[in-house]
Image 1 (cartoon, helix red, strand yellow):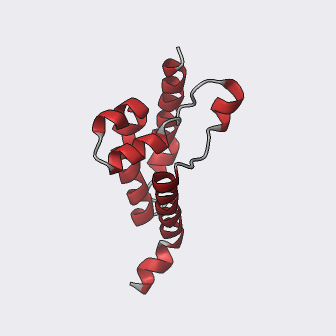
Image 2 (tube, helix red, strand yellow; image 1 turned 90 degrees about the horizontal axis):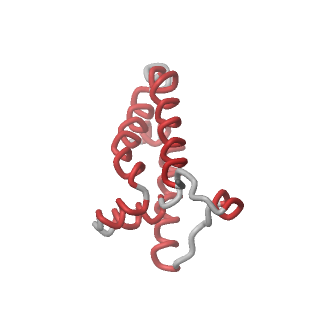
Length: 117
C-alpha cells in the first residue's frame, strides 16, 4: 500500500482536489467561471464539464449529454488513458503522446468551433 501511494501521489492529490471541488459546487452552488466565455462570450470546448460531471454523479444522462456531448462520449477514453499512463508510465504510452492526444485535441477544438456556429 505504501508503494502504491508513493507511485500515485500526484493522482491521489488531484483526485482529492476534484472530490473537494465537487462537494463545494454541489452544496454551495459556487463554481469557477470559464475565462474564455467571460472574455469572448463564446463557449469553449470544455464549457459544461462541471455540469456534466454533476449530472453524471446524479445519474442524469440527458442533462450530462446536453452539457457537453463531446466530453461525455470521450470521457471513457480519457479515463482509460489516464489509468494507462499512471499504470504503465510515459515510456509505454508514447503513442498516446505522439498521435492520439494531438488528434483528440484537434477534435475537441473542432467541436468547440461547431458548438458556437
